[in-house]
Image (cartoon, rainbow, N blue to C red):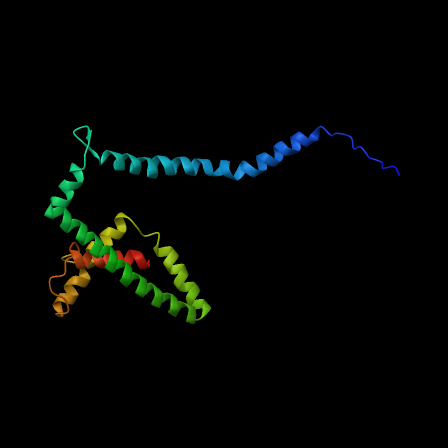
Length: 175
């Protein structure tokens, strides 16, 4: 018995096809390169710099910065207030958002579309105008604050205090 081997001619385009395939495979990575660069420059690099410099005191490795922070009653109070505000605004915001989403799923699609359109439109109202609106409405002499005080529903509400910040944080969480 004899076996025959069929030889195929070598094509020079094999390497160019492999190069094109390699280019197509890494093209999405190149599109991500500017994002990765900006993320590194403005997020990771400053965080790493702060972390390593937090262990420096008078140019030497030390834990004195951490001891100073945890020995300060002012810093302990600031951390506990921040944790309190974060936990409660998250819990209350999550509960309100869950109720709103559940309700929104049960209504007519026209009403749902209207609510979504309003929410999308009002999300453009941010920054300084939104802060000004909160001050005008809920500040010390804000319209809603004065109205609620007049009817005896609130007493001593301060937008810049713990409860005022909680209201603002909850607004941002559900909006």
